[in-house]
Image (cartoon, rainbow, N blue to C red; front, side, top):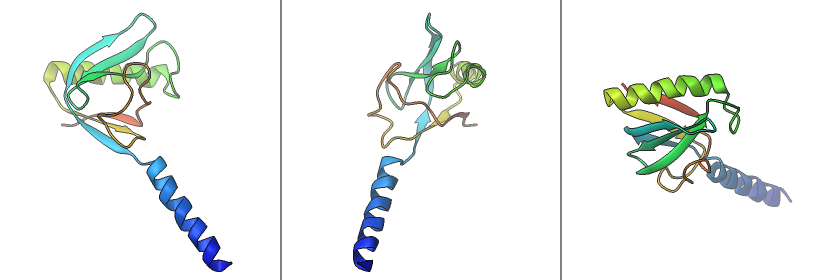
Length: 113
């Protein structure tokens, strides 16, 4: 019985670490825009595609408007100054995440300089 409990515990730990792993996406912001519904969208070098970070009009996937407006400022600074950013996601790969509004909510968005 003890071996079975240990096996189940180890299996659950391995599964949960894979399901909730974090990835840090590094690169430059090439384009920034806010769509009509308030979505803050960036085109980044780690994706070579468009990714929504948040919404300046409403809470989006748990990210408040206040946080989003600060990220908008940081994204514009990163674009204009060509300062790299780091974005953290609860995902396994930066390249394979969904695009546009289907993107995962970032854990954080940071200027990397």
